[in-house]
Amino acid sequence: MIRRLGLAGVALLATALTGCGLVSSAGTFENTTLTDGATPLDGSSLVVTSKSFTEGVLLGKITATYLAAAGANVTDLTGAPGSASSRQAQLNGDADILWEYTGTGWVNYHNETETIADPGELWQRVHDVEKQDYDLEWLPPANFNDTYAFAASAGTAEKLGVTTLSDVAKLPVADRTFCVDDEFFSRADGFVPMLETYGIPLNGADGVPSGNVTRMDAGVVYTSTAQSAPCNFGMVYTTDGRVKNLNLTVLDDDRKFFLPYSGTAVVRGAVLEQHPEIADLMAVISERLTDDLMQELNGRVDIDGEDPSDVAYQWLQSEGLVN
Image (cartoon, rainbow, N blue to C red; front, side):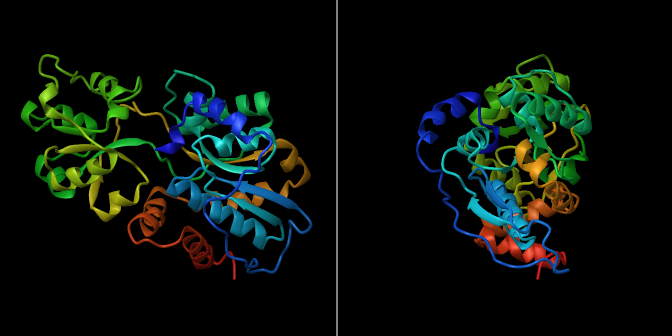
């Protein structure tokens, strides 16, 4: 996923962003108004950006649509080209609002290695260091966590009687078969240390033989997991639309190995100081966003082929937030 970019990518694109305008590759947003007719951001000018993967674009479109409905003059730079350009644009002061993930902030932007399992504690730690180092305000996080997980087809999960990763560790060795992509396999916080955490080390005694692990493209993992071939368990992202579409059962990470990746709207401190109403408006959005909802919205784009701008507007309208 592009959201897990490294600092090398940020540095690489910094020069490219200097002296040239960041442009959107994702079109525009729906012009509308708040249902109560209020315009708390009247007279303000805001630049909303996002990374280019589906969920990032959707969150950017929701934000651009809603803040414009509240009266802001919004420049839409969602779907910014390049995996690091949206972050760099915000650091440069060329963009004002960007959705980020707490795990990304902690690991990729600040090179921290400590695993903090509690989502609230991780958010606070990231909030504090980002405010101190960059004057970026990480608003209270939304109610979704787009982190790593393992899933099985609903039928396989029921047949094997598994709901947690600890249950997988109790299965016969022959049933501990996994599909993962190369990036996750080689991560310092990825597949191999995850197996060790659950007491079934790769190639260890009574662990997971290397022959039980199939490495493949990330997209193929989902279909292979749904078919339970060549693996019973596949690495997924918890808010990916394919989880719901393919009827996959996400297993509970009961030993809290995976770092939380809570979605969070990030605003430049100077902008929030000038327009504090942004915090209350974004809270209305954040409190409504859940794992199930993000799976649904992501699926409408990735699986059904709908335009992210349309999906964002229709969701806001269905929530009674805009006309």
